[in-house]
Length: 188
Image (tube, rainbow, N blue to C red; front, side, top):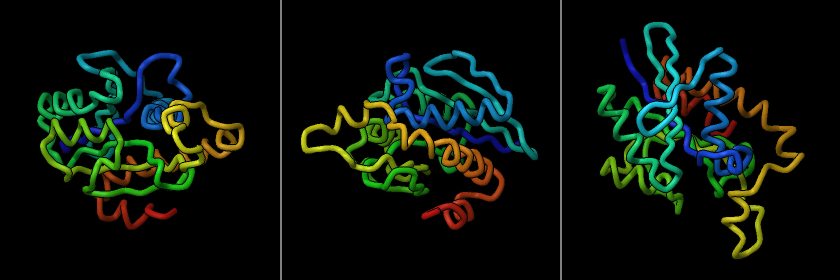
């Protein structure tokens, strides 16, 4: 049975729950709700397992806080003996318009501390990522307040549809592969 590690990046705690920076957690929470899965707190994160057509998807929400996400990712890849090409990291991206989706097989951390730590711990920039656009609608010097800020009413009204797309992306990644997933969802 093929295994996949799907990691949603975010920060633990109620004060971060509805922030833009926690879109990775939000995508996985929506997946779990839709598929009636329950997260259990285990070493370095909350884990839920989903099986589909001979594939096992291990959903991970690291509890290491954003800046140390790589530690949890490396631990679960190693523990579950999952090859790096079967890793998908879901993260927010300031460089994309709100709700835009970009799936990539490699790239820089783009100034994102969660990706930076992941890159450091995995010792590579070549891992799959699902970048969710949160836009850059903040004034100079207000980036931290913006990413740690809560969604606006307008963003919230459009979020459910984008979260549904996230479920499709995760399933496509495991069933159709990264190339087909990029072709099917990038720019949509």
